[in-house]
Amino acid sequence: MGQIDFVTGGARSGKSTYAERLAARTGLPVTYLATMEAGDDELRIRVERHRAQRPSTWRTVEAPRALAETIAAAPDGDAALVDCLSLWVANHLFDLGGDSPSGEAVEALEHALDAQTSAVLEAARRRGGPVIFVTNEVGSAIVPEFALGRIYRDLLGRVNQQVARAADRAWLLVAGRALALPPPDES
Image (tube, rainbow, N blue to C red; front, side, top):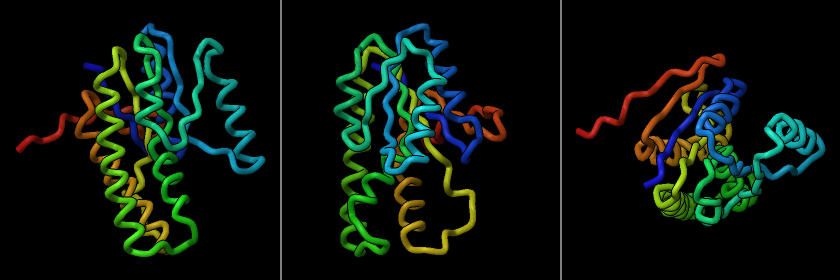
């Protein structure tokens, strides 16, 4: 069974850098699974800068939505680094369109994300190499003013809990410092 690592933290907390160090320390080839869709010039520049900082030997695969399939297709002997679940959830939420999706649409997405996250974790467990998931911790801030922000926070919180529960190891990054999280309480 593949090992699952979970790295979370706020914006600019150092979580991606930490996850990249974890991947490099495995000594395995790395497949970087990128979930961002660069929809404007500023994002395209960010993506290129981020890509240029990674070792040139790392393979990058775009995975904005079909994450389970992309994890399953990654070479078995590679460490797979998923950066990040936050954008993966956002991509699915944006697919609903508009600033105020209906309650039924949100509920359907919630169920779909639960199922997709289970499939992602199953694909990660079947791999012959580790999978490192990066995500944002969005529950520590103020309650978002707009409905779409609250919906996003709740959806990502559910996905984060599901992946963190399944993880063999988990860290919270704060100001570039990694805090190891204890295993989930099974009681």
